[in-house]
Image (cartoon, rainbow, N blue to C red):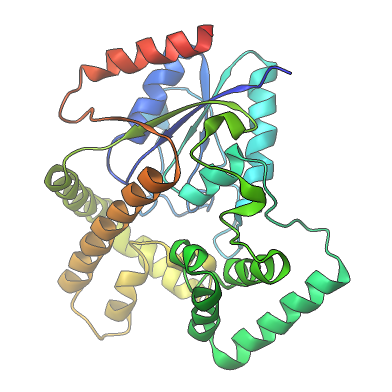
Length: 313
């Protein structure tokens, strides 16, 4: 059976994924699915670098603004929603383009492995309740430390504040003896094992250039009103969205514990560190064709030729 073609654009923050996805969508009758874990939240626009209406240039975008800021969101929800959108876009002869930097989400979509659904057996429910109780008594850090002890691979990619995901990682390891990131012997570097016919493009650039772009982006976000957005998240309390870089760094300022300038520097520092982790994740775990469009903008023509050739295959 012929697989559905899906174009995927990955890479670190501030490298130009949004702009390229829109260019390619215009070129190939594409529609864009966000592969970002925070752009799903309504009202969180600046800190998540959400595409603006002007930037979108009329290109349809999906899985943006689909959740309230106090709701949780999982890789399973992303996978099921994105699969539906891919089928819809393909049915009208469009090209599905997934653009984003959340590696686990991209991986869960491309490869058909189990993330856990709403259908629960008794054993799974009891296991989850056990670890939820552990978290409430011992704390999120102790819960994450347990995952790190049994499955450091998963722990490295799951933030300790994401209690639901940490528990899911423990569940999978206890049940299967293997990491949630490496189920069923799937080789994630072998795109032929994907449930789709995938063209996987990655954007990168020299580290100093990338870091400078990140610093400039944070300054621009501050001018656009990032502080007010961060205060909104702070006032929501303990929610999954507070994990986002650009929000939690300002919490000490709101509590009166830190100067705002220091918080801004923390946002820049954490954003740079995150970009480094994103690059490492994609380079170690998936077969990506890498391009540096910042150093060599004309390489976009090569990307268009490569995508054209792939579509004709």
